[in-house]
Image (cartoon, rainbow, N blue to C red; front, side, top):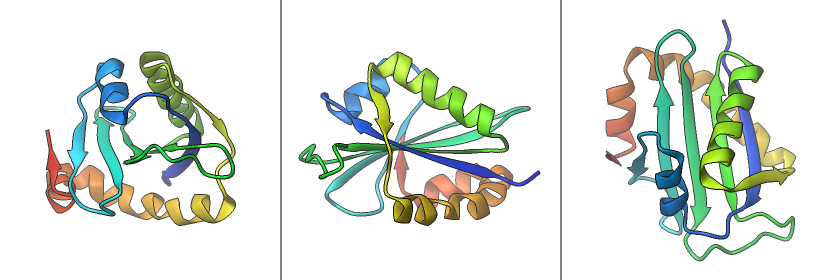
Length: 133
């Protein structure tokens, strides 16, 4: 079954670290990437696995489109992706209703290709991203 990636943009009033704490899932902070962006990762295993990456600019700067935070969810179904976003929104109080730029959506489709490797060895992926739990 091919992977499906959903990218959602929104406005987050609080720090991303506080938002992920409120959700109640296990999140790790990603240590690799751009220095001006905070990123956290969570995942669900089992019958319907998913990979969730939440990010926010360090200064909470808002883009001209009106967002300052992104959620990228990859799983095997659009329904699962939508459920993950709804759960994150419900727990964090954030709303991800801004349409992200199409170029960004295309760029994040790389997770469709990475997801099968992640499922085979999530520990290796987390190590590569320098995730701190």
